[in-house]
Length: 380
Ligand SMILES: *Cc1c(COP(=O)(O)O)cnc(C)c1O
Image (cartoon, rainbow, N blue to C red; front, top):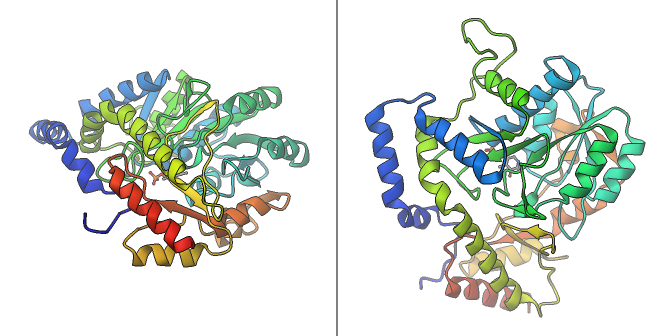
């Protein structure tokens, strides 16, 4: 093998699904139905059915899915287009920028709560503390980070007791389950991203909101289409945020393979875990007994020498990435625009230690072995 392992090889994935995708794209080209063609409605139906949700509404990106779900919840729970700055939405500071940004765009204020160092997800104990300490909490956005689902049972109980809504950021975890229930299908709404590197990716940007709430689904749909059922006479401040027909065509061709590819991600993770289990200088990701983890990333911790290890891996031809180098509460956009519960020390520490190794559902055994050998050498 040429001694190079990429983080993710989208070309290889496309080649393995070429026939299905090309046929689906050819049908789309022949139809010339670019805006909200049949493939979009078909995908919405299939994705909702796959996760046991009643409704799916396609949109232009995972980021838009979060904004749309929040805006629809502002309309439903407050009767206003946007939340007020005094409405706080709890989320993790250790996530992609878009999670926190969506809260600002919906008019509310992010309330950052620290993560559990073992799972990288919101620490439920600290969420409970924050609910006593932070005023005006309207909802919670759990982020199922790297493919690991949050404890949705605990979160649902908390949300029901306090009448908070839950919007699941499922951008990295389509197919993940908590006690058999699919991430995205458990809260008031779940947000999916079809960005190319996600577990189900298209050929550009795409996203979807899934929900069991008919009224919420209808509001989200209106917001994707300029804010009304009739775009020449609208009710709300809307967006132009549709899922392109051509992206839906790609996704329809790919959806049937998702479960198999997620199982393959888990097998790859098991091989990594077996080979690296003696390595005392790093900490390995955990998979909780109640969780079905779908490993969008295989992320280890390298205390003290992460950057050096990343550089040396690169010299040996092994790509790796730092998701994420900075917690959200340190970013300029959130200064004075967010509240923080406690120290967020675990999120800060994670940003200094994490390193994501190549994770691609078609990664070959010899590639995994090469990554592990290289990592062991580098750590010596
Ligand atoms: C990718 C991602 C998003 C945003 O999705 P886009 O489709 O890129 O807009 C939001 N949250 C998390 C955790 C993500 O990984």
